Length: 271
Image (tube, rainbow, N blue to C red; front, side):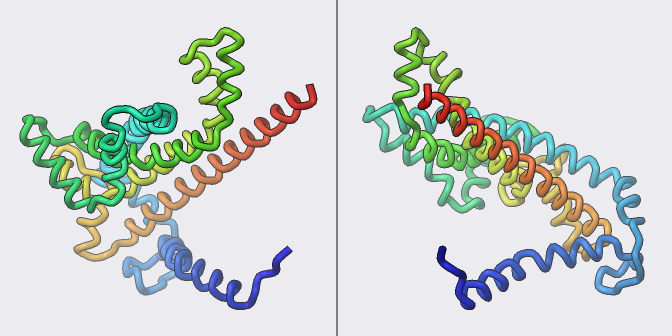
């Protein structure tokens, strides 16, 4: 077993400190009694109560959560389908163009993506609101899902599908009963990635959101320009907690599925 050198240890420590110390400071100051976020005035949770009474933040949070769930679900379905076509479709007419269209949003600046979607929605006469944000987030999030699922499908043992086909399953049944349960960890990871991207997006949402639909990042950005308030610290702490719980839960579920899959494969080899 290779031991960590002092250089690697120091590098990891500084890297994690750079990433997480600001979050820890933010969480600590969310319990600050003082209204001045840079002056510690004692421990208090009153700003969480103030946040729960702020209708504008609660409405923006509800819009953000609704958009994130809808767009990540659509992106997962479409991204999984695109990944399956790219990996299993072989060489077909237009494959290069299709592959380029899938991966282009990964490197396209968000300003260009948001502006092009804005012009599209204006051109077709679609009023900006929750639906336009969902469509915009689905457009770029499905590319990330496709990459994650494709990496799993490439290493997938196709003999399992062939065995299911030999036993009388159709292509759709083989995918539903054999392929999908095995690649489920990658699909779940893709959904979580799409959910996080949607939850965090500011640039594209600012182009595609209308007066009737303001997401939480837009609301926070607008409020921060006037100065950071303790309510924003409390809101950010809640978001960190939700994301942490979601990541830990998904990791435990994925690990359990992988252990179960490994155990099933071992039982199949023994039999």
